[in-house]
Length: 336
Image 1 (cartoon, one colour):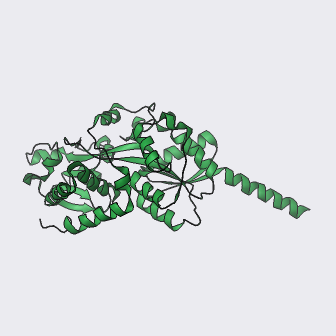
Image 2: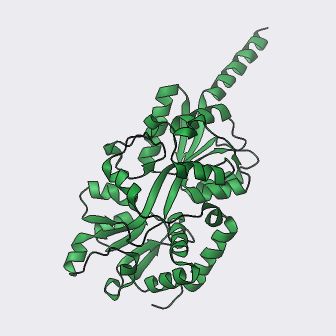
Image 3: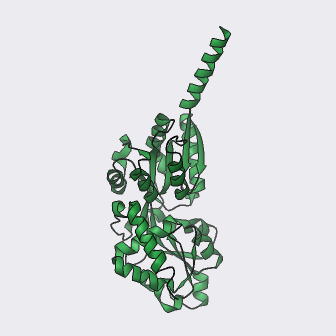
């Protein structure tokens, strides 16, 4: 009798533990990952086990664990790897009741992913410039992509490598869409002459430019904000010709162990309160919820001249692989 009672108690405890926890892989800013999962736990009483990993690492993990997922929800990170995961059947379709409050670009991503990937923020591509280095060399502030290929910026430009960086792939895809494939690759080969190095990660440019190791860094503009808050002499530039962007995404993992709690977080993460950007977060990602508060420095980016980014074409694994291989063969190895 005691054995049966003990077994029942253990069963109840295990059931409670299952319903009271949530496993999240987060691919956005570490501080944001921690603050949002903490806020959700306080609001709901659900324990969140959160691990911060880059998008490529999460995608690889979901692939490896496809038959026995240990993750319930993927929060943040650029949309491309989320779409790849959707294409490979690793995600669970879900349409939150809160989609009615989201921006068009969020709903567009959801529709194009067959309800598997939802946009939660948008980040804008551009470049940061170290004003002190620029002044020392008596150069004019670059305002356009075309300025970056001028001879005076030889050895002054840094960006990441698309074979390892999702950010760099967005740069590559942006040039192809902005200029056409032939002219886009021609531009990248010309830019190559001014590049001092291609980094493994797309987040390295913020520190390189802040420290004066590179005059110009091409990446998502939100990367430079913490350095600006810390006093670095960085000016961010939205290129005059127009630019690309990435949508930070959120997805439910197919076969996750806590699907109901995952949906609760999903719904909560789309609310205005959850997406409100407070100054101390030091980010300039545009929230998907149209009623979420964001500082003017964030709202200013909504006025940026953006390309009509083709999520379906450039999110497809085959197209991504083709463009990266072409870049590796014709740009990275081009003479300087």
